[in-house]
Image (tube, rainbow, N blue to C red; front, side, top):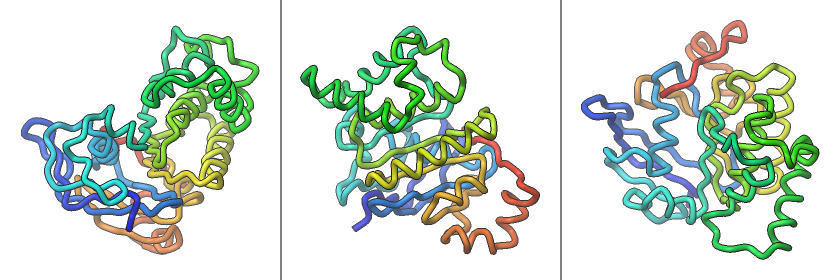
Length: 246
């Protein structure tokens, strides 16, 4: 049984159909990536899973149980964390305070538990240790992205939804970020990744889907997608980068 399964999911913004019958699955322990051009519906797919799209039909199963009627807060409590495009950390809170906010759906932790979990996050993201008292607004883009991912992990999710984590980051920072994504998976995390940098996404993924104007058109392993001429021409040719979807 897949950890996450979408069955014929449709989502709309008013009268505009954004997803037109999406069916996909993510197995426990996998990294699965969604590729597609601007407006294809990649971010909408993550928002739909997170319960942020009210106009939705079809079904979404997490651990075999439907979550389509579950509130966004309830979905977090079930074990799905969504790190949205644009980071959206709290700029007026310190790094440490941002991390503490990530535990809000889990109930009250003891001081010792909180300290242990913050230490675990700074072991994965070493830059955050020296920045623990820095305010969110003062961080670089790469540091903000690391903090956003760490805050998501503080909810102890079983599934991490990552939306365009490399957007706007320098190449060296992107390399560091994807090394961290591999580390997260090695610790047992399941990841559904929307990423503009198709080459980088496929370098860490177990499988991938290609989304075109709200419909899935191709599915396969990274090598199968790399060998697909249409996929290469659209998303991989000459190191081309796709744009984020909204």
